[in-house]
Amino acid sequence: MQPNPYLPYPVRIDDIIVETEDKNLKTFKFAFIDPADEEKFAYHPGQFAELSIAGRGEIPIGIASSPTEKGFVKFTVNKVGLVSSALHNMKVGDVMGIRGPLGNWYPWERLEGKNVVIIGGGFAFTTLRSSIIYMLANRERFGDIHVIYGARTPGMLLYRDELAAWEARDDIHMHITVDGTNDPNWKYNVGFVPTITDQKAPEADENTYAIVCGPPIMIKFTQPVLDARGYGHDNIIMSLENRMKCGIGMCSHCNVGQYFVCKDGPVFTLAQLNGMPKEY
Amino acid sequence: MTYILIDKSQWAGGLAAAEKAYRLFGPVQQGAMSNFAPLAPGQTPDLDGLNTRMSARSVVYPQSEILFEYSLDPQDPEANVLRETPPPPKPAAAVGIRPCDAYSFLLVRRNFDAPDVKDVYWLRNYEATTFIGLACDQPGGTCFCTSAGCGPYSEQGLDVLLKDTGEAYLAKVITAKGTAFMAAAGWSTDAPADSEAQFDRGKEAAEAKIVSTVETDRLAEIPQMALYDADFWDEIAFSCINCGTCTYLCPTCWCFDIQDEVHGKHGIRERNWDSCMFPLFTLHGSGHNPRGQKVQRVRQRFMHKLKYYVDKYGNGIQCVGCGRCIQYCPVNIDIRKVCQLMNRFGQDASCKVA
Image (tube, rainbow over all chains, first blue to last red; front, side, top):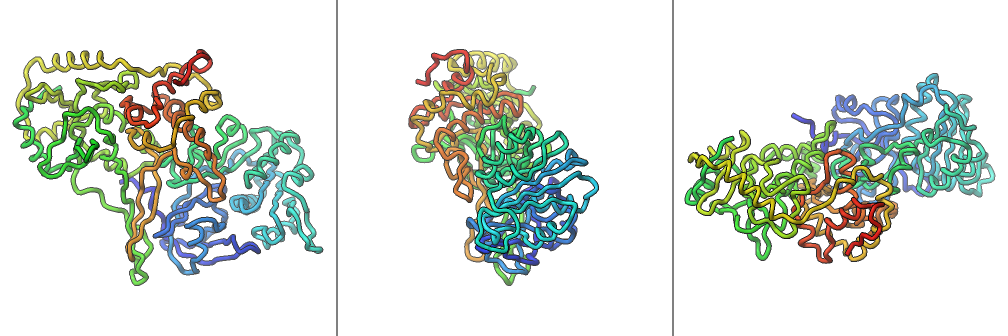
């Protein structure tokens, strides 16, 4: 008997955190109702899952927790459509479903012993949070770690407590930025992510990899900066989004060329993307 | 190979007997349109027409299929937990399916039966279906199956192939599933000794009637992005009205949507056929649309069938040559011409769409 890949694991909402000042982003912490399901849901940073609400549908969301964090899984969700709005109206204790883990992940084996530059913008920081937690928990396996993370305003940054804690560490180089702020006490950078990348990203070499995840406009202007700084296209790792339904390479919604973003991705190197239609 | 003779006087009675063990599907008239649909008790399939307007894909892959059911009643301890819908109680038989439609399931299977993940619904339906094909002695003007990996007497994907001889059907029993169906129908009359020769002669004559073809020999070698950036897409897409007819009639189109439907405190999650012709198919929550323009969607349909599929599986095009999309396109877009343009890319600059 084949397992049914469309069947979500039942989960209970254990905690809900409002992340941003516009209250449009909330982090949901889920516990598996059957503890055995947590083991079946073994995942890698960079993967996603379908969040399933009976009566509403499913949405594909990057996993924000790290596999090194046990007892729960976390997702940060922007309120945009039918399912995400329903999710934002749910309460702690409510029962829903998670289907996954889905897709590929950042190439952790290849990144072992390498310098990693995380470049993120806006609410696409979720799988990057997963990656940072994971790398810090396995700190000896990586070289220098830089994080360039920008949002529109200080209040739109995700995971602000953790950002502050990472700032205080000496084994990770944080470059937090905002597009603009009128806060006189803002002590970090002001400027768009591409500008800060140009100023702060370490020199390129074959042992340095950039993981880029953000809105299309950020990616569009960050890529030339990385090019100019000499980052090879095999060393630029991107995570894509596309409209999805099945998440397992069946329904063809997220199809880009001969690949599915859901199954062959969401993680691709820029070298791979250069040979694919820009349909994402 | 076993051959069995089914006198047409035994046809309805045999199907009535088979109905006890099988859910029967076949070509039927529905108003002005022919469709491949479930047969009512005692109903015989209409085997006089050529191909049904809708393909036989719904036998295995219904236009709407319930995946899960659930309760939304807060008093129910199982509320909000999805339950898989049970499979249909009886196996199915597609009676009078044309060889092109039967072959299409083999192409679609590569998607649904991937090495690492299985679409359990498609597979359980496919495995529970027996395909009783009818050879095409009078192929249509838009049929090009012989150059699309198939043919009017193709046995690929079939359990039985029938040949209409006027007073009888001559049945070539291909698989064990086919043997079981013939037994259920009670058809067991030995066929004449020249049956094999009759099939051979019929095949040769039918294939000779198919004069329209597609050229596919260069598709695999042309670089994907060169075809993607080819200058002919605007011209091909110019007249398209994005109605989606081609994708709904096509036996090899497999895209679907998943939706939840609620009635009172009872809900279902179902999947419905979807189409890459529609802008909503790729619309992001942010409003961004990677294929927001018509030409992008038209290109996607043809690139998927004639290039991406070719490159991904290395086993030919995602088309069986049934000709439905040519016959029913309201603006006369012809996949044979598009395929020719793609296949001659870089060779024949004068090749025009019209």
